[in-house]
Length: 126
Image (cartoon, rainbow, N blue to C red):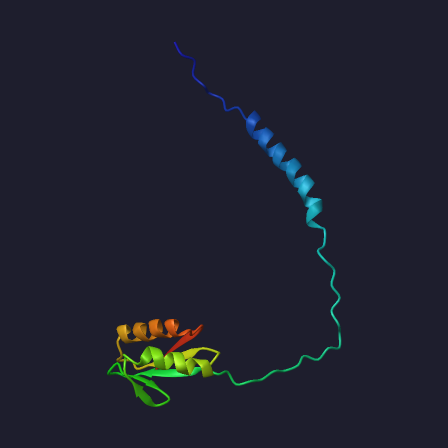
């Protein structure tokens, strides 16, 4: 006949808690150490640089037509026109879309903009 196991041995559990307590006692003093002490100058006036961001704005109409500087651009010429125009606008491109324009027209414009070298693209729904 097999003897049944009626008691839980808590010795291994106690050992684990004691090891964790020792680790915490060793690590706790290390947490009080400060990092590098820096002194910040008190009377320094920040130079305000206010420049107008140079952002190219492209509009997509409800009929999925592209407009740059109020000129309609055909989808075939979109990539080369963006590559020429983005040189004058280093801060990126803003795409304004009509609520009725398709997702495909927006994705096409974004793809061609990335190939043209546009680093930052924002989208605004009109």
